[in-house]
Amino acid sequence: MFFFKYFKLSDVLICQQIWFTIYMLFVLLVVIIACLYTIPQLREPLREDDSHLETDSILEMLLKSEMKGTIYTLDLICLVFFTVELLTKFAICPEKKRFFTFGLNNMDTTLALVMWAAVILDHIPAVEHVHTAHTVLRAMFCLNVLRIFHLGKSSNVMKLLLFTMKASLGALGLLLVTLTMAVVIYATLAYFAEVATKADTFSNIPYAIWWTIITMTTVGYGDLCPTSWAGYVVGVICSLSGILLIAMPIAIIASNFDAFYSNMPAAEQRIRRKRLNDIEAERLKLSYNSGAGPHSLTLNTGQYYPMRNVPTQ
Image 1 (tube, rainbow, N blue to C red):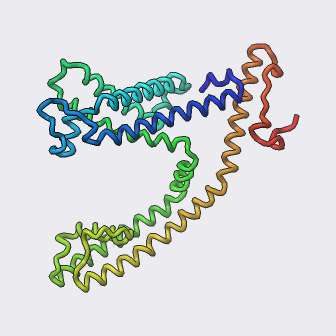
Image 2: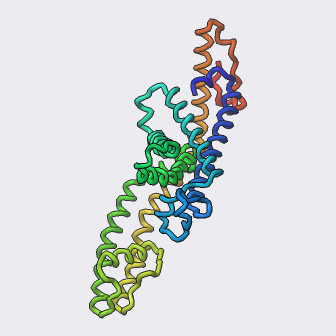
Image 3: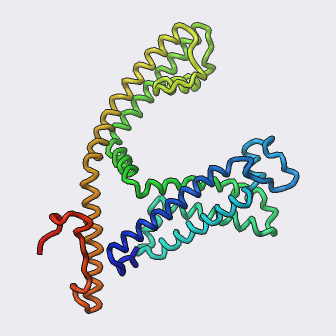
């Protein structure tokens, strides 16, 4: 944040660590609440005639009930925290137009609007005729689980995975094309193999496609499987070819991951050094503007990276 430049560098780093810890705790709290939101025992009916929530379908349970007081209060506190954090980020953002070019900012804005709309409808009895919209918005409280993406925003591991996937788009495309071709071919063969032997395991080819995907990826749910000797032959060839088709592009992806992982420490050091240099340049700029001179603000960088990396005068 821009006001960090008025503090010492050590104070800036400490404040960042404290803020990051608090922020992650709220993210974890809101994700846990979103999971608890779906437990019928932790909900209470909106009306007295909807007292038997366990007998309804899951959708009706969500629409006809609300969270109990304590959980609702915690969720409301989290909503206030994330709303204040979102407004603060927007207020201090130097380029307002670029603020909404980031996916997480758009997600936070959408969630805040939806959640506040539901909260407002909770406390305005004059809009009882929009009960359907109200209950739908209330059920969307579970979308708070999407805030878990914030855990990966500052995680080097998540960035590493994203860089690996981006560098491996060609291999992923090859995997998708080859698997699609193989799935269609083996599903058709399995379907007609079962039909020819009058086993009738697959009622149609889409069911056979489901079985083929599960077989080629070695998941093997077992809900569908061939029952004839011809189907067994197709199943053996399908499973073996699936292992080979998946293994070849995976080797390319693993190679890209190893390359990024081995270079990650050096990249982190460069980023850390750049941040320190940016803070130092900003502080020197402030000292010149105030007329105090560059020696009025000292910056001890040796404790943050080795002295051999500090340029000599």
